[in-house]
Length: 216
Image (cartoon, rainbow, N blue to C red; front, side, top):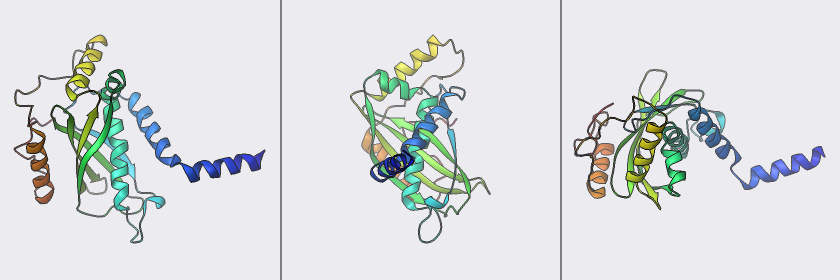
């Protein structure tokens, strides 16, 4: 029996990226038991640490691991804001439509970091997010990622509306603030702004052309 279990486990880990699905599930469960964040424009934080299996040949975090960690941080953020539930209720899905990342300083083995996720805007078909890797050692922004999250079989407006209804049903008096009148913008305009932000060393400043200009 023990041999069968070991063989089955070996096959499972060989065929599927089991750790990815475990981390994703843990991110959702952890977020579910945290206080809700109804303001979808708020910055949300997700903690991480560089483990041995994250390293590359230079002994710092592999470039692709940054993108992987951003997946978990987005799941965590969507769960706390209830956008994930709204996505399921609407029968939709969400996939990366485009992404760009700027690496500013390597994250070393056992270094703790925080991913700060913020929705910068949306249009008819997608959300636009900024995610920052902030070292807990000295607060340095080690990497900045911008991504376009395409919403399939639904729309950002529908998801936000469903999340608002969930807030009302739960009787939360705080939460979603009035959305600025200039929230809307074209995908091309936002994408161009994000590209300029990554190329500019002053990435800590919010680009002026983004459709969301309210800081949390």
